[in-house]
Image 1 (cartoon, rainbow, N blue to C red):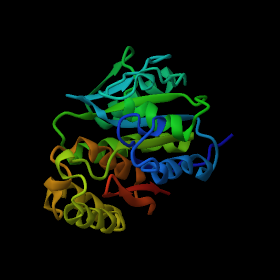
Image 2: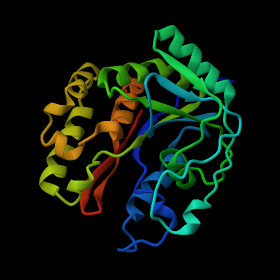
Image 3: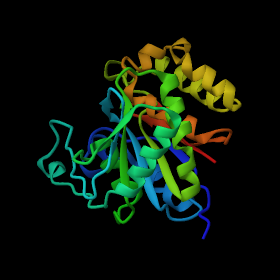
Image 4: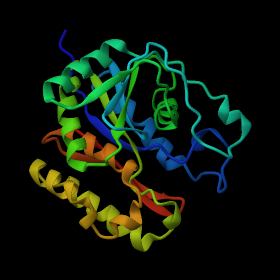
Length: 263
C-alpha cells in the first residue's frame, strides 16, 4: 500500500523539560504545547517513523542513531528532580537508519551510524508532547559541527525520499536562541519577520537566503551560535518546493518565536 507523502516540520523544542514542570508564569509554554500537539492530527496518516534532526547533537559528519532501544540523555541542568525521571519508550528503527545510510551514501554525504547513541531533550521532550503514546519508531540525526548552512540544506534534500515512505522529518531547534537576548524584541521581531519572508519564497530563493542567513536583520543577536537554526535548513532541504505554513508565531519568554510545517 502506498504511503501518503508526509509533511516536514521545524519546531522549537522549548526550554529544557519545560512542558513537564511548573513554570513562572504558569502558562508560559501553553501556546507552543498546543502547536506541537496539533502536528499529529494534521498529518495525512500516522507516520511509519519519525526522523528528528536535533540541535543538541553535533558531529563532524552526519551522525545517525541506529539503535533498536535508544536511552534518554537528560542534557539539561538545574531543573526539578522528577524531570530527570521522564521516560519516552518509543522504539528506535535500525531499518530507517539503514535507509538513511543508503540515501546519504548515494548523495555523497559523509556520515556514520551510532547504534549506542541516545535521545537528547531536543528529541524526547517535544515527542512526549506530540506523540505521547510513544508507539512510533524514532531515529535521531545530528547537525554538522562546522555549521555549514548549504551542507544542511543538502542533507535535507537527501533525506526527502523518506517522506514518500510515510516518515515524518522534524527539525528540532528554536527560531530564536540567544540566551543573552531573550526578551529583546527589537532583535527577535525583525529576525522572525525575515524568516517568514524567506520561507515564503520559491525554493531556490529560500536556499540562497538561508545560505546567507547571517545577512538577516540582527542575525547574530538572534543566534549567537546557530545550532538551533540548522535543523530549519535540513527541513527546508527536505521540503523542496512545498509551501511553508506557520503553525506557531507567538512570544515565549517575552521573545517572538515561530514554527513551520511544509506541505
